[in-house]
Image (tube, rainbow, N blue to C red; front, side, top):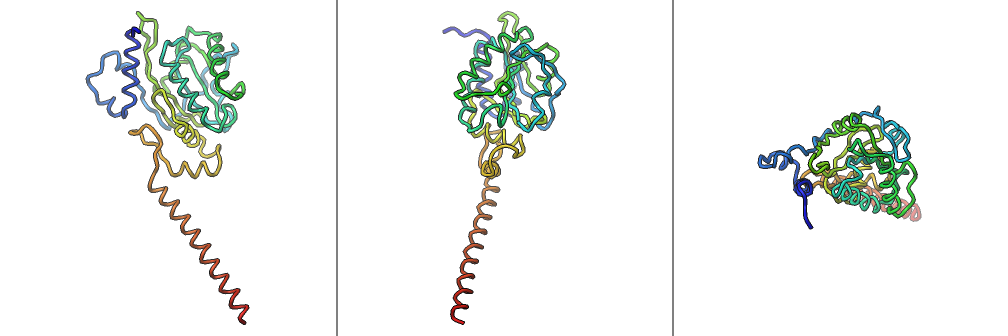
Amino acid sequence: MKFGYVHILIIMLVGMYALPATVIGQSDKQPEDLKKIDVIEHLGEHIPLDLQFVNSAGDTVWLRDYFQDDKPVVLTLGYYQCPMLCNLVWNGLSNGLRNLDWTPGEEYRVLTVSIDPTETSELAKAKRYRYVEDFGKPIPDDGWLFLTGEEEQIGKLADAVGFQYFYVDDKEEYAHPAVIFILSPEGKISRYLYGIEYKGNDLKFGLLEASEGKIGSTLDRIILYCYHYDPNASSYVIFAGNLMRIGGGITAVLLALLLGSLWARERLKSKKQA
């Protein structure tokens, strides 16, 4: 199997994104083209919701149409005729989401936006059909959306999330990073997840975090309290301090119940003796 220039570039990039982000920023030995591909994190900032796109049915939509309820949003940027990396990212995302007991369109939604302004709604429709059909359970129409748009609108969205990519003229392909973005229901950037595989727990905790506890069960929120995102591990890890606090609280409650039970027994015993 022969690998072209863009494929080799992308493979190198995916490998680098498996490392801590600080390593990427400190390297001075990257090929010049590789330096054009990056993610500049804008955590806590809001994406512009007044951007206009076209959905897979050919209808003109506004980005704000998908941020009008309590659902957090998983955003992906790529293009539908991508020969390799985009499909790896979407496959990894689909596999990770499939492990959740939540459904796109119910507890959260997924937005996939093409970075190629020449792509059409027909291509978006074909790509959506593939992923919705393969998901394994019914997804509402607004559960996982595939959008296309004009270059200016795409550029504004990419800039807002810090997604840096470029077009390789001689290969007629885009070179871009492997990353997904988790946004709050108001469009605030809550979390960046890198790579081509996404653990179910990372997705779940990211969505819980972005929704500020508006989705999921009480147990989910308690579990999230025990975890925090570690950029060096590129994953959510146990936060010992919070875990100890919860353990201490549970111990205090159990001790109080035990002492209360003993006190009640002694009172009952004293009454009988009287």
